[in-house]
Image (tube, rainbow, N blue to C red; front, side):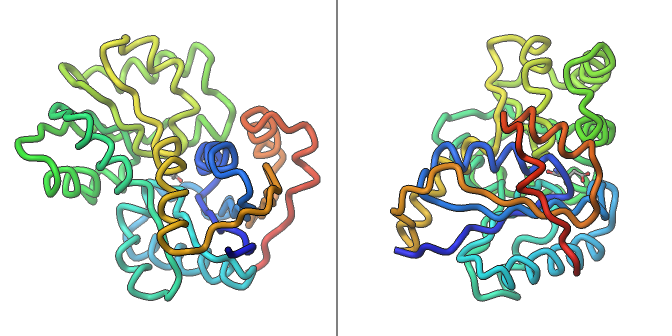
Length: 264
Ligand code: DGL
């Protein structure tokens, strides 16, 4: 039993798609979420910059006395997870491993990945898939416009439909499509509508949340106190649009009261 919070971070609203699943799935756990809005977007930064931003975020969360850290960001997971695990003596969990395990269990071989430019450049998904799944055929697609559109709340309008259609063009004959950036589940309905029922469109946060309980149990750090849906949000830069997108996603009208400025 460990009543401390779980720390979680992303560059902006994207990681909230992970937060949403974690607070649903892991009742009893409290979450402290950091949105590094000052440094958004992570997707087009160098690996060196991402490593530094991750260190800053993790140092901030550790000062808040968290018991584990979730990197709720595909860009940061693909480029900095291993490095962070070496640097810190606290469980650090990314979004890739649990999803690759899910795909392996499902027996998928033809796999599409939509992600940021940095994630695709790092080959983070493909390398892990190739290690676990023999003869996997991975089609990568970088989608640099989607995260900024998600920050803007443009996830269901005509522009979203057009941009998604353009990005889906090369993703043919696949069994599953990994939404490899945590901003992309905000487009899940539009993507599913266009790609059809035969493709399993994967929200990594949903899979991570399911495996998180197991990870916390293994490490003996679960919190059984029933403090359902308890979370706090810190932002490195205050901007009102975050509140609009977040309150809609988390169905929380008073979300503004939970948001504070993170100074570091
Ligand atoms: N949500 C992030 C990801 O999963 C970062 C998007 C961005 O900041 O470019 O990759």
